[in-house]
Length: 497
Image 1 (tube, rainbow, N blue to C red):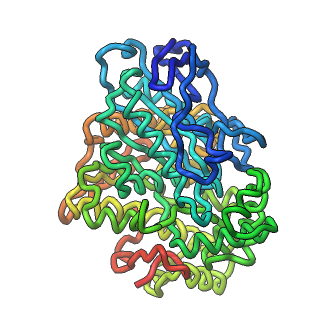
Image 2 (image 1 turned 180 degrees about the vertical axis):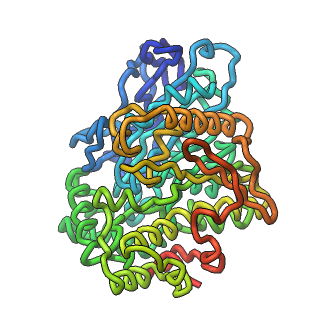
């Protein structure tokens, strides 16, 4: 199939079961050479028909994820979008809702080509046009470079949304009805976009699963860049950092991240050594999204949030975080995050490791995600709450387990580990319910259960054999967190009184 974009014509894959996939379409120029560490620039036009039947190159990183491409030194055309669109919508008057997916990966790794993000099932079940994008991650996208913009990965996402605005009608989509969805760092990106002036008008709704309470002040971003530069043996200047190849920069960042377990830049990095986050620079990102939503800055954007009830068990399982095995270590961890004593009193039952993981998950993901919806609603926006609670003996309701269900991709590479084995009929029924909710929300802003209202916070609990809607507070100790303020830019930790 051939489609016309503003840069030229593209040929996608032949339709499968009524869905065409057009992959690896450039939405901006390669961000290297004169454009490295700069705002995204327009993609060059091309003559003839460009073959777009394979995913584009991914951003520089060392990660090798199941079923996904790996970055190769020399890959530069890393800014591309992928489109899945139903048969019969092309070139006509169709205006289907658009779901724009932003992948996660700690702002450090990942790509739109991961098998779990294939948009075919969502497109087919929901009557949507599905778009995903690659953007700069790691130092290329979020590292501080003097004289260059911070948050280059977010600027890439805005450029991709501008591509959607200008081109999606040719694929059957409605440029005025775009829902931005993401998980983890992708969800953090999505709520940042809600708060950013350059993104205004490019999105109508947001679906945010497991939003991390993770943002840097410029001074902290500069300190991390200094550590990376020192590791690579260059000055922490634009000239010094530009002298490093992408591969050299990736290697230096990996070493700094590993060293953070014993020599953290911030106390919390000793437990979860993530070194890249969006930078609240006072310009592009003027404040963190929670404060922005509480002020009513995005009240015109509908919001649907979800978090898993046991987020950090997954990160523990894959060895991404530090072990805590004693009461004294648990006290040290709480101090590193700035958790008040009253919070600790509410997590007294069970083994130390379980209490540690519950505390970490609630502080970093669950409470922040939930509070985004509550503050958005209080400021006049429309917000819906949900929580993923489905469990199986081999897998808890942990970080990322909800994504295969929401995409309808329970059988792809990597999904079996996330969901604890091969899916059964109950899992497929749950996936169908989540697909319908995403599609309905993208189309109308109503996922099928009540919005957060004054004095009421109904929560859809995604589970098997059935899910339900109940008042918030049943799955996590919300009352303990009511008086805790998220001071996300404080170097000492995540929360404070």
